[in-house]
Image (cartoon, rainbow, N blue to C red; front, side):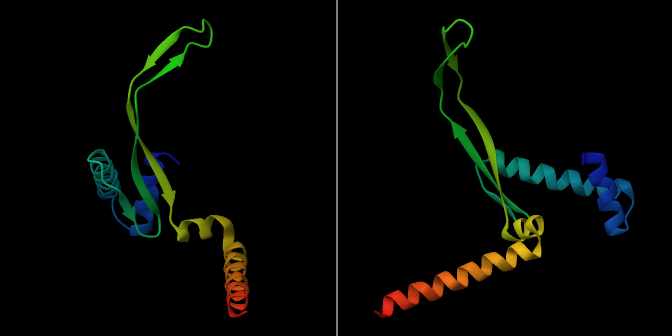
Length: 115
């Protein structure tokens, strides 16, 4: 899905004009980008968290010649999906299995602690 398709989906879901939907999508993207650029985490409940990352300058090698090459420091972003997003991706059956595993793990740790 590209940005124009996202705008169309937002306009249809919210029953608003495409211009309003585009303004809303742009506002969300701008807010996430500006907060991340400032070095702050941005969390969207039910969707995920955008975290800024930094890479230090380092020396690399040109794979063709083997000559050392300076690689400049850079900034990036890491996205961690929320639990609700993961469960949607994996389906409800996978979510039930993971909660069942957690419940049995808790029971087994409790039984070992009593001994």
